[in-house]
Length: 157
Image 1 (cartoon, rainbow, N blue to C red):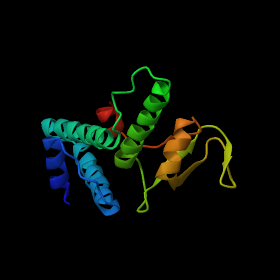
Image 2: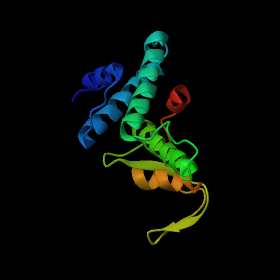
Image 3: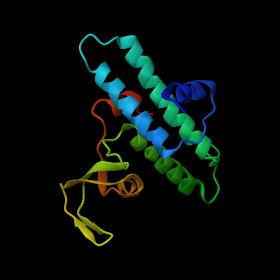
């Protein structure tokens, strides 16, 4: 599925399940467009619409994969479901806006020293780790996922 097909699906309000290669291509397209938008003379209206599409894409991805979104209610598990929903949204934001390598390892900054999977990570250290690990460690306040500069501020939900 091409970038254009994905955008068309988002605009129509439906979101197909994406393969790893489609996500890689989507990430490359978003990065390329961000670079274009950061140049002097970029057409502001085009960039504004692009940022709104990325924001909408994250929302559609999240809502299509989180069936209880918005229905957390006041049950005993309401705060837990809300937190899980926030972590899933963070996953999609990181998936599309983080600095990553070809294997979807994302660049992180260690906020608090910790040991994970037999490896020590000192505070202030930067490294690449798998996206899923980064999002979960971020939810605990141990790391900060580094984003493509300027993009997250434009699409923050």
